[in-house]
Every structure is written in structure tokens, then in C-alpha cells.
Length: 313
Image (cartoon, rainbow, N blue to C red):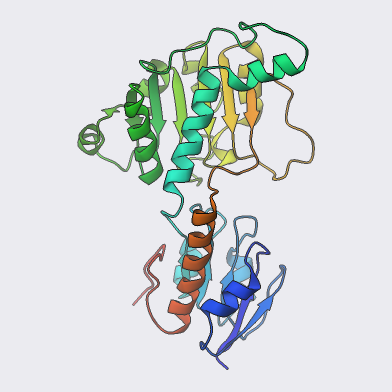
């Protein structure tokens, strides 16, 4: 027996893990943190289960930690690599779903769909209840983060005749322009667009990316969609911007604590969805299978296809 593979996230069906690791000569065990043991060689840990230096120290034989998500801010990738531990995510499994959900939320904000529905359910019949409704075509959309999902959102925006601007410190202006968007700095984009979508990973450089100062740059009556990570946005500042009217609306698929300990603020122009933007049956299956197969690669001595960092030689 090579060792144990811990299924540390109940989102993984044990039957699927057993099927995909069949013949790998490992024991499969479902266990909640804290995880420990000198025979644990693989760990499947979802976004709600951090794996940092402290967790790694309890797993001296660990070969790989893998997550069934695009985001990997719950991993200390550098500490793992220094220890010779592979870290893997699934970087491209739900691009269409994320882009479609972002666009759906954006359209709902621009056309007041949710606010109007709430007003009717409250007994009103007033087409102005959501404030001025924007025409989607011609709206200037600022895409913050121009990776796979950001590009897909930009393409959908262009198909709806939106004017798309984009910013990303890791993507050249030439590449952004070649994809049909206008390249801009974050400050230029915030002060020039009427709608904003977020598509950047959460890390030390992006935590609080959209705070009070950035919200103050946005034109009065703008809308914001965040389907990436809650920590990108100062939540208190966002609610204040909505209540003051600086923002006409916001849509969040991610919250600082999920599920939230209390209902979200009852601001009429705030849409909150339960971290569902990634989901379709097809995307779910792909994410689970690829993250499990990455574990198989590592325990068989192969380089996992979705490795986040190269290991020291």
C-alpha cells in the first residue's frame, strides 16, 4: 500500500474517487480537517478548506493537494512547492458557465430585472421602480482581469454590442487589443466605464482591489458584478455605495462567509446568488474528475497536467 488519499471535501463523491483511483494501491478515506498522518500522500481539498504551512507540517509524506475549483487562494502554493508537494486546480473547466452567469447578472442589473420583480411581489406595478434602465448595446463594459473568463465575458459583451475595455497587469495591451477590447489601466477603466465585472484571483496584491477609493472613481449610476472572490471587494464600502446611489446596482456570487451567517443586506439593487456561477452538470463532472486524476498522476510519479507550480529539481 502506497499510502492514504484523504477526501477532505464532502463535495467529492467517494464512489467517483474510488473509480478514478482504482488500481493505484492507495487507501481512500473521507476526513474533515485537521488532517494528519505520515502515510497521507494525497489530499482533495475544496475552496473552504485551507492548506497552508501548518497543514502541510502534519502531512510529511504528502505528494499532492488538489482542488476542484478554478480559485486556489486556499493553498500556500509556494510552501507546498518548497516541500516538494504538487498543488493543482482546474483552471478552465467552467469558463462558459462563469461567463454566462456574469453576463446574466450584468443584464439583470442593467435592465433592472430583479429589482422590478421584487417591486411587483411587494404589490407595486411601476416600471420605474428599478430606476433608469440602461440599453445593453452601447454600454461601456470594464472587464477587470483578462484571463480565460475575462476574455469570454468580453466576447459576449461585444456580441451584445457593448463597448469593452479591459485591464490586466499580466496581459499586454497588444493582446487585449487583439482580442477586441480597449486596453486601459485600472484607474482609467474605473473612471470611464458604466459596468464592471471582476475576474482576477485573490491574493496579497488583489485583496481589497475594489475599495472606497476605487468605487469613488466609478461614474455615478454604475453597476458591478463579482463572480470571482469576495475578498476582491470591500463589502462595507460596496453597500454604502449602493445605499448612497453611487452604484445603481451590484451582483455578487461570492461572499466573505458562505453561507452567510445572516441574510445579505436588503438593498433593493443588490443581487446575491449562492456561489452558483460555476455550475452546470457538465462543469461539475469535469472539475471533479480532473482534480482526482491529478492525484493519480502525482502518486504514480507523473507531473499533473494542472500543476500550479513546478517542483524544485
